[in-house]
Length: 162
Image 1: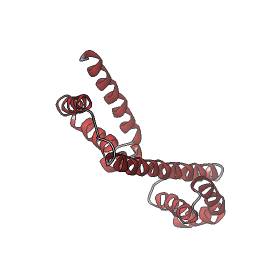
Image 2: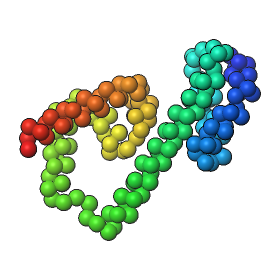
Image 3: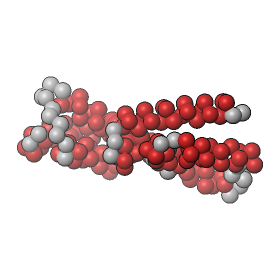
Image 4: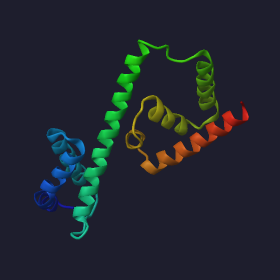
């Protein structure tokens, strides 16, 4: 799309996109950022929008962007809760530590490097699937596929070794 076409989309749909973002995020500044991010991505992509589907595409893009922000907030909240709980409670029991070490050993020895990296980014660094995909330069669907296979392999391994 040309810059002029994107400017026209911006003028036509900005207010509706912004209202949707505010409804989801309850934060005006962050909502403006989300809408701007959608247009920035549109500018940097090769997406061709048709007039009859542009509004739906843009609103879906805002909704998805807001979902990512909310998911990221939840990760931060869990992290801070975990950190504050650690000061009060021990982190893992001895049995849990043994299981965790066994899990990490299995992952390092039995899984292909890409699956190991996806696991590390998703579960240890608590990135969203989209963030993992962006970091590794792969599609979100590839991340989901690897995670599904990874979880199934881990489940089978622990089922057979308990």
